Image (cartoon, rainbow, N blue to C red; front, top):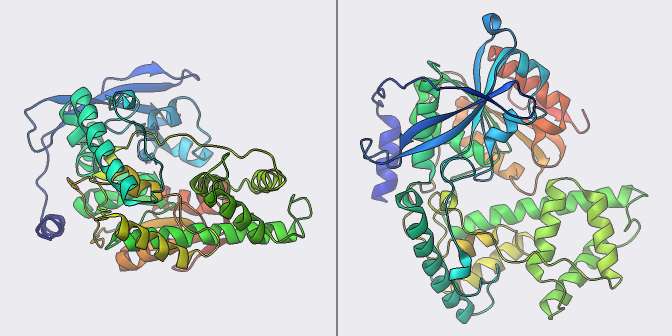
Length: 456
């Protein structure tokens, strides 16, 4: 409670200006050979700026007409820990021709990721990796022991960066990047987990915000593990329902004319009963991925094949936990009894899909204690309202999350809805791109309640 109060007070108080940042030294890079790369030097621990340093990898694609550009647009990658540099040095399809013409486009690899001193871990030095979904107190205890042993191994290999990879450090890195680029105010477009960075920046540095787009919106206000999990379960079920509706009206769907939820649940029950070729989590995770990417035909083909007796897909073990996520979310469970209760609550919200794929976050972060950026209601007071973009049906960042963030922002945020399916509406819809581009270029804020039709 005290840490949360301190966070909110810090957001409300004036933030001292940082010392002048050194300009970045750029060098040519990328497949197209018209991009540039550089490194931003920042403290490992921002509380001790004179201590050890880390180099953040940065990429830039310069606007062709430097005299008439609007400024610099910083892209915040998702993930967490998606590589942003690759987005601007090896392919520009993420950005419209309008943005490429009017802005220098800059992105970065967040600390601890690909080009920015990636965290080093060796799970082979630790006991067997636990399953993402726990089924007993023995599983719970084994997962706690595994996580703690793994984290100690990762910290030994990585050093102090392991303890400073969360949002409180990333938001300071972003402001240092803004200063190094010579921008008085930040123009930013964050996607998926990158929206959390945009929210944190607007909260901490409201006067340094020119314009911020949050695409596929993360809601960081969940007051409990149950609230987080049920919100994600709602989004998963909603996206699954959109897939079922598509199959019902699409003759080319492999399951057209059949009871898709019944088939899915038959497969789920067979996995629970011990079918050897896939687990309940495998089925949930594959469904999540296919609905997120709107690969409906591939999902239908897969379900039909597995229902017909072909082997299912095993996803293997979880990747090494990202301290970037565990340090940003407090998602505790005291014991297996509480954990099982959380899954039952999720199943009540999602009677078909049962639980969301994000249950893996509970398992991967089980036992994590040093949450440096706990959940809280947003407190943003920017001169220009933040622009939120979200699909109506998105299994990763549900419309329920976007609506809740708009509520928290009040007059300082406006949500535009893509009345269709999928994760990442800017990439899906020309209508959404046009609205976002107008906002970023001229700060034209759409009327509240604006939406774009599916396919537009």
